[in-house]
Length: 319
Image 1 (cartoon, one colour):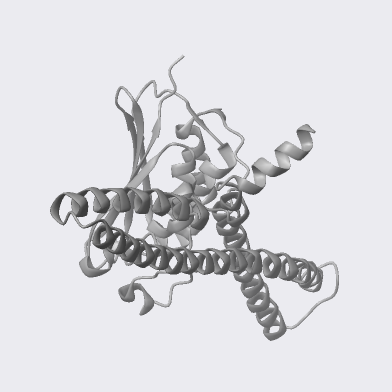
Image 2: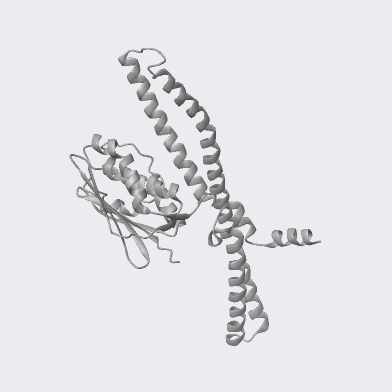
């Protein structure tokens, strides 16, 4: 009996389809339909009382109320139907990304391992030219693998399936680890990385793996878009409620007219394209969404030709 009642409740519950589409309540077609329905009832009642007070003829009052009700119901149906098609398209897009990413990952991994064997000195000696070709293939496989990982991350975020395992971590220690990891990359790009942290910084509640991803994305961008003996400065400090991360570069900067798009998926500023830098345009979008899931915020200031400064905060969890 309880199971039957539960099924009936789920069938009538306007929030059930929201989980299916992976949408918030205010984006869910069924909830919006119910909300608009309540508004329509309110409008009909208001129309009835206004018409009854102004006109007095019961027949004319009824006709006016019925006409307005019919118009509003038609508008409600059209709007809700449109939202449902958009929601379904969004769900299919997310599923497509997930399926394609998983299907591509396995052959790419196999090809990567095969190339590693071919380029290994233990396998056999190969010519310099052949080795260059193998290295180009290996680099492109890495780029495709990074893109697949980014697409999977976006898909998991949008469907609410991104695994977050929060624990108390040190943002300072994570940042030092990432700076060391990027040391060779920074030296090859002729970019100097400076780091400064306030004393006695508290730990924050965050998923260490995804927090590393956030710092990596920001440092990678700072180095990538800094040219000609550039400099990247990282600072961590706190106030009574939050811990702040700041990363400043003197790179190419972001054009003012494009700054509003910077956290959108697949967006890349026009001025960086001429440098032919690699990137999918997903890094900052992922960074923003991960920080939001961990209770943080991100923003930036930038001037074209002078560089950019990105900031993010995470809440300090008090015991």
